[in-house]
Image (tube, rainbow, N blue to C red; front, side, top):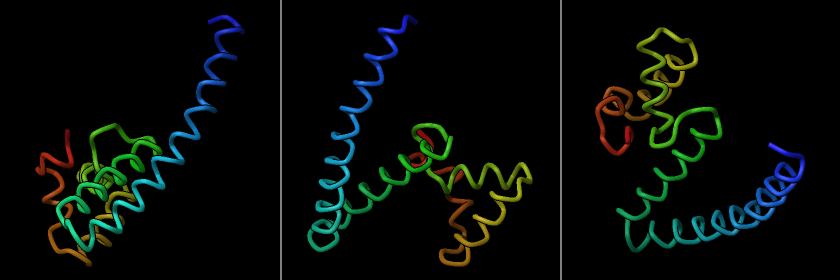
Length: 106
C-alpha cells in the first residue's frame, strides 16, 4: 500500500470514529428506552454491545464474550474459566448455554 493510501485510510478511520461515538449514544438512549418499553429490543442491543466488546478484545465478530469464555474454559485457559465461574455464579449454566446459543455464535 502506498503512503497516500495509508493516509486516506487513517483519515477515513478518524471520520468513522465520529460515527461510532454517535452510534454509541443512539444505542445508549435506545437501550434505556427499551428497558422500559421493549425488553426484547434491550436484550438485542445488549448482545450487540457484547459482540462489539468481544471484537475489541481480539475476539471474532458474531461471538459473545460468554461464548468465547466458554470455549476458552473448555481449552483450560485460565481467563475463560475465571470468567465462566463469575458468569455462572450470577446466572447458573450461562457459559454452557453460550456454547450452543445461535445468537452468541454467528
